[in-house]
Length: 292
Length: 316
Image (cartoon, rainbow over all chains, first blue to last red; front, side):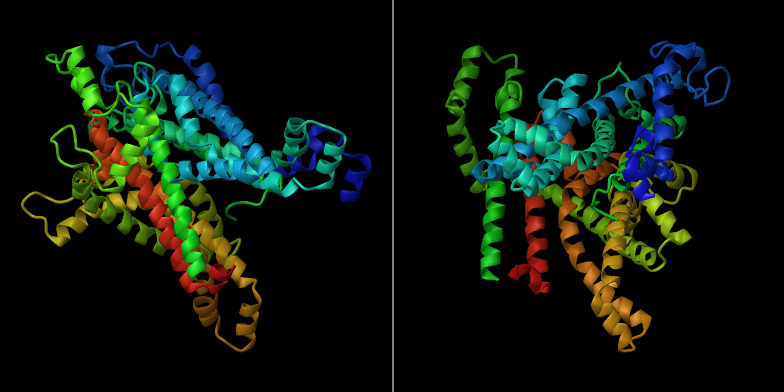
């Protein structure tokens, strides 16, 4: 099997060893299918439903799911929960994804520089990483979001600010272990710039661990957005997000439990899917995990 | 050992300085700074505000303000609450017991359950139980704590009526049993994520220990499987778990804040949110720094404990 692959090389991307291993990971595939379905529903759903997120139907207040024309029921103002759930999903998934990209970029740059330069620059950068890690993320995020005006873009920045450290640590360790290897020396002798060696020669070797960390970071970013929006310091109404849909749900827990159950289930499904995908990627890309 | 201790103490001190810099950075981001609250008073003129800023030393360069602030922090002067003028440290002190009670109970639950699930998963590897534990842990890690809290309240308070929906005690009762009754649901909710993490690590650590030579030796000497497991495997597997308890402190504190909000638990998490909504910056800042100090101290204590138990660490 292996010799065959070696002789012919991976000619098609789906014949790639990592891709084949990923597709044999049942949980990862399940996660991928779930997240695709959820994304599709959030993108297409609002067009298919006959309701708007802000449309108030006072005759249909507190309608339970599957009763009448509202599939997932309505909230205290008679707004359609399904329409709100899908639009909120766009916001939550987009915020989670953007925060992941920003924190991976920041973490990678910090990690590469700290690992390649080493010395006091590296030490200073890595101690800053430790400093940020010492804060329970929600305390820092809430304080920042109360201090700054919480626009969706600002929420992305604030979440990324408390989630970049893990990628930085992974990249720093990887780069530090490769710094003295022959291909790096060869690059230096060829007169390549430090930036070229750091980002074009060394960094590609760390793509595996970064990919795994990225998918787990999406999961954590979605969770963190949900936490702060639930507490009222994240995405601000009338723009719905899965977190802020739960914000008012506690007081209606007895009369309209679906208001709490449905958005929370959406968050759990999305986050579980990204965690499953991360787990599958870890096996497929042969990344040593934090736990077995 | 002394070298290890000094080195570790020095590292913690450096970390405290960095944490204070990040905290101070957050403080200076706040709109209007510490005088924002006074600005809301209609009787305040611009001149009054400027004089107040001068009195508080806010017209000085930032780095001087930082050293002044950090120096007072070290002396235990953390400022006064805008709400009632009480010193910040005594406000925190009033709420810390509730948080530690909640965190402590849920950590004990997480360790007990997680250790059991982890060891059983490792000794019955690839069994139904093991798969259930693995998948269950990943789902548990993905459930928002506050949502799990809401669902629990729905079932155990509203449907079954077994447990109170919130608060730490019933007014007029407040016996130990009453506290315990109120503690059950929030501590279980808070422990869910940590049971998951703990069981995953414990499974790996037990598998690691099971493959070691000393296990073979113990078996060869005729020790019963139970004795091998309890004495040789679990002892060695639990060691790295002490460090894990330290590493998990930030996430337990994050979970505690959310859990306290859902269950109206009078700890520092709720205090933090209340202070945010009152723009009570001295308390917000105090808690931000205080939470980081708990984390740093917790990790320091965990490391020292491991070094005491395991000579391999302190000599390395």
